[in-house]
Length: 256
Ligand code: G
Ligand code: G
Ligand code: MN
Ligand code: NA
Image (cartoon, rainbow, N blue to C red; front, side, top):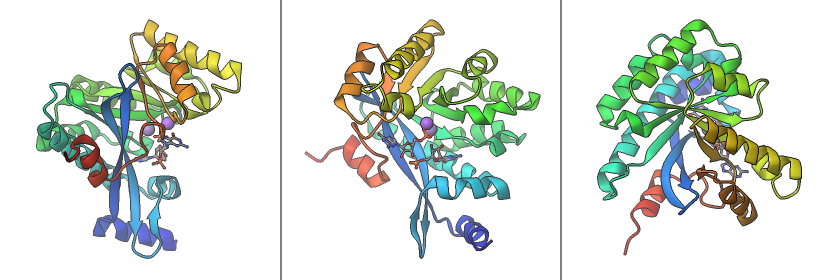
């Protein structure tokens, strides 16, 4: 209960921050986009990771204002970085969405307004959905996802392969990107079955003309296996951990 009061205060006092983790094109290791990951900078307890407050935020509905801030802030930063970059291929920004946010009828309006006020092109925004979020979906959820896609925004299935019915989600939801769960990537070197499953998911993605992102790449051996299997994109500590805005500024625009 104390934590709930703390969280309510955090929303009012803007105690949240974003980290950005690079998503890299494996072919040439160029940064293709960034995943926005929220943190709570608690005045006494310090930095609180999302797994310790997102569940409470979902139960209390506080995820709605928090998620709205995350979306607007992620779009704003991405638009700012793209305006500073000389490259003609703009960075994408990926934002995680909770089931609670998808239940709200005003979600497409929120996405529209976050894009308009930031100036970020819709094609640069990726919404990440977890499989668990899609399990108990209602018809309105699917309509909402289609409305968001109609804006030009892309949808990614996060933690792919860990849900109850991964293949059914690919058939039933208008997905553009598969994010292969870290647990598969972890075991690539040690378990032949994990390597085979990972390569199989990549081929499945290719057959369906979806982009594939391998999550949690930490070692060069994993990178080699994934690159050999033609996985398009990857993210993980091997490339970079989630970075503060300042650290991302330095990475994107190194001082000569
Ligand atoms: O770095 P990491 O501890 O940031 O993130 C842990 C998990 O927290 C992620 O896998 C993601 O599912 C969730 N998460 C991070 N940021 C957000 C966010 O802005 N909204 C939601 N709903 N979940 C997030
Ligand atoms: O939304 P999602 O569950 O995919 O969020 C990614 C989570 O994985 C975040 O908590 C992020 O900090 C974490 N992460 C990203 N790269 C790595 C990695 O290489 N190793 C580990 N252990 N965690 C990672
Ligand atoms: Mn994610
Ligand atoms: Na994930």
